[in-house]
Image (cartoon, rainbow, N blue to C red; front, top):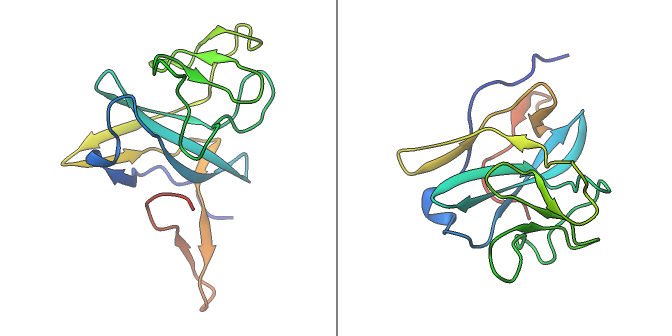
Length: 142
């Protein structure tokens, strides 16, 4: 089995993440299973989380890339209304109790946003026609 990735993964340009606006959604492997994650800009900082509610592990966006409530203050789960603090992912209301979103480390440099794999969250890898594994191209998930 291949070693887990640890290097920064290019996600998008800095301009793709506007303040308190639509998120960039991307594919990852969570515990070796396909999953979705998202990144957004809140109070000038890029934050990223797994697209999994702490209450019930379901995807939270109510439209593709739309995670914030109407006031653009909280990350809101579209399934049961759990609300999370964008800065740290902690539950602030609804059925998520003391839960929190699973964070993904990010870095913004030279106009590019990067995310960092962890033991549990890895990039998606595709096999090319020659049988060699190539990392997925950066960018938005379909």
